[in-house]
Length: 125
Image (cartoon, rainbow, N blue to C red; front, top):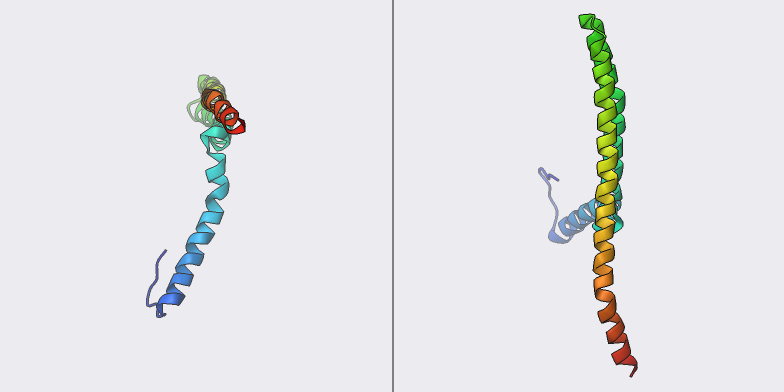
């Protein structure tokens, strides 16, 4: 955010700044919520899957272009192999990361359940 040659009094400036930062916060809330480890980081999962699909498409195309330039079909096959490998790595990595974060969250919840149950029993007596 930049203000150049801005003339206003303090309340106007505070209102302007507050509106700017509130709009920025509202715009970023979905990605903040989506990246929470408690939810298994769905934004990270989608990003990993997107990267894998992108490589799955782009690598064979690049390999095909290079094989046409150098008249060697092995570059096309290499591109297919690289794209498929990247898709597999990103898919497995994304799901493994999400599963690990969900498992960690579940373990933390299970760790505190007995103490919460004990607190509830003490309060009801």
